Length: 76
Image (tube, rainbow, N blue to C red; front, side, top):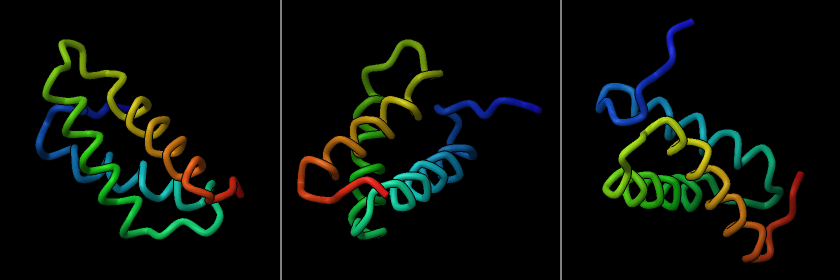
Protein backbone atom coordinates (compact mmCIF):
# COMPACT_ATOMS: atom_id res chain seq x y z
CA UNK A 1 0.00 0.00 0.00
CA UNK A 2 1.31 3.44 -0.94
CA UNK A 3 1.71 5.91 1.92
CA UNK A 4 -0.01 9.25 1.45
CA UNK A 5 2.19 12.36 1.49
CA UNK A 6 0.66 14.66 4.16
CA UNK A 7 1.97 17.76 2.35
CA UNK A 8 0.57 16.80 -1.07
CA UNK A 9 -2.51 18.94 -1.77
CA UNK A 10 -4.22 15.97 -3.40
CA UNK A 11 -3.88 13.90 -0.21
CA UNK A 12 -4.65 16.57 2.40
CA UNK A 13 -8.43 16.42 1.98
CA UNK A 14 -8.48 12.64 2.36
CA UNK A 15 -6.18 12.69 5.39
CA UNK A 16 -8.15 15.46 7.14
CA UNK A 17 -11.44 13.63 6.52
CA UNK A 18 -9.98 10.43 7.97
CA UNK A 19 -8.74 12.26 11.09
CA UNK A 20 -12.14 13.94 11.53
CA UNK A 21 -14.00 10.63 11.18
CA UNK A 22 -11.75 8.93 13.74
CA UNK A 23 -12.17 11.71 16.31
CA UNK A 24 -15.95 11.88 15.88
CA UNK A 25 -16.15 8.11 16.46
CA UNK A 26 -13.85 8.25 19.52
CA UNK A 27 -15.17 11.37 21.28
CA UNK A 28 -18.81 11.03 22.29
CA UNK A 29 -20.91 14.15 21.77
CA UNK A 30 -18.47 15.77 19.38
CA UNK A 31 -19.79 17.83 16.49
CA UNK A 32 -18.45 16.82 13.07
CA UNK A 33 -18.29 20.40 11.76
CA UNK A 34 -16.46 21.63 14.86
CA UNK A 35 -13.99 18.75 14.70
CA UNK A 36 -13.41 19.29 10.97
CA UNK A 37 -12.70 23.00 11.53
CA UNK A 38 -10.23 22.23 14.31
CA UNK A 39 -8.55 19.50 12.23
CA UNK A 40 -8.23 21.92 9.30
CA UNK A 41 -6.68 24.65 11.44
CA UNK A 42 -4.30 22.38 13.37
CA UNK A 43 -3.18 20.45 10.30
CA UNK A 44 -2.35 23.61 8.38
CA UNK A 45 -0.64 25.16 11.43
CA UNK A 46 1.60 22.13 11.82
CA UNK A 47 2.28 21.95 8.10
CA UNK A 48 3.64 25.51 7.96
CA UNK A 49 6.47 24.84 10.40
CA UNK A 50 7.22 21.24 9.51
CA UNK A 51 10.46 19.96 8.07
CA UNK A 52 9.29 16.34 8.20
CA UNK A 53 5.67 15.84 7.18
CA UNK A 54 5.17 12.20 8.13
CA UNK A 55 3.90 12.85 11.65
CA UNK A 56 1.49 15.70 10.88
CA UNK A 57 -1.64 13.50 10.68
CA UNK A 58 -0.99 11.82 14.05
CA UNK A 59 0.01 15.11 15.71
CA UNK A 60 -3.15 16.75 14.37
CA UNK A 61 -5.35 13.90 15.58
CA UNK A 62 -3.80 13.88 19.04
CA UNK A 63 -4.02 17.64 19.47
CA UNK A 64 -7.66 17.95 18.33
CA UNK A 65 -8.70 14.85 20.31
CA UNK A 66 -7.18 16.32 23.51
CA UNK A 67 -8.86 19.65 22.84
CA UNK A 68 -12.26 18.02 22.35
CA UNK A 69 -11.94 15.95 25.52
CA UNK A 70 -10.76 18.94 27.56
CA UNK A 71 -13.82 20.87 26.35
CA UNK A 72 -16.13 18.39 28.03
CA UNK A 73 -16.64 15.75 25.37
CA UNK A 74 -16.04 12.18 26.48
CA UNK A 75 -14.25 9.37 24.78
CA UNK A 76 -16.53 6.80 23.15
